[in-house]
Image 1 (cartoon, rainbow, N blue to C red):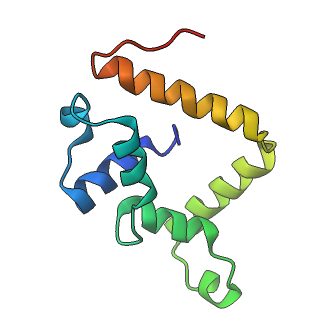
Image 2 (spheres, one colour):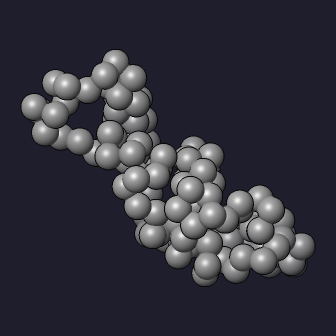
Length: 111
């Protein structure tokens, strides 16, 4: 999520017309996570996800050099990064949530 934040921001702006950096004080964590979850395939993030997840050999043959680079970089990164546990994933999400709350002028919980 951190690596794709710029894609997330631009996708939310394109799809919903919301400039996250300007609206962060007005967005709840629930709203922001719903926007992220609802990002469609016509957005910058949706297009990158489609490239990263493509496995059809015929479609891969028609990929541009840039699309191949994007897919290969992602796949290499996934091989290097071991999967995290559900508990660690929830912990990381909670950390992001608290960071957003703090950016919006709220008080983040200390753990």
